[in-house]
Image (cartoon, rainbow, N blue to C red; front, top):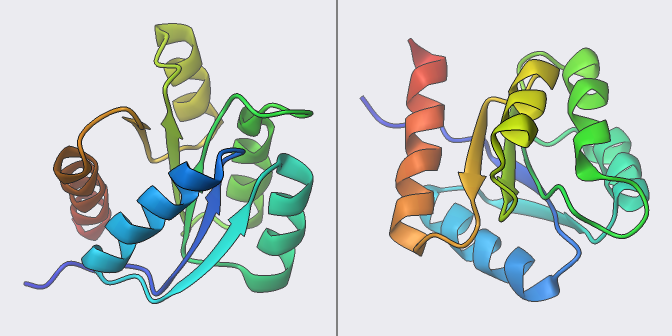
Length: 128
């Protein structure tokens, strides 16, 4: 059975090169449309305007912490894939993300193939 991959994604990270890296991974998985934000305020606006099927969210960003978006987006849409992509993998942070409604937590300092495999696993789990 083919993987049920969302057609659109919002990538939220304050580092442009990370957004490009994530976009390349998602494109290989089959995501077609991308929205990008460098901070939480821009991410909120893009979320409201486009309602993508996947949100890839960094935690540590200037201004608001990315974790504030997790319960906001989840309350707005319980079907969206909501994945934290961060170098901050402290157990308390991971727990807060999952309790807030994130579908998964992926370290962004992992090789591309590992990130793609972890995303595929998240997509597969939702199909069960």
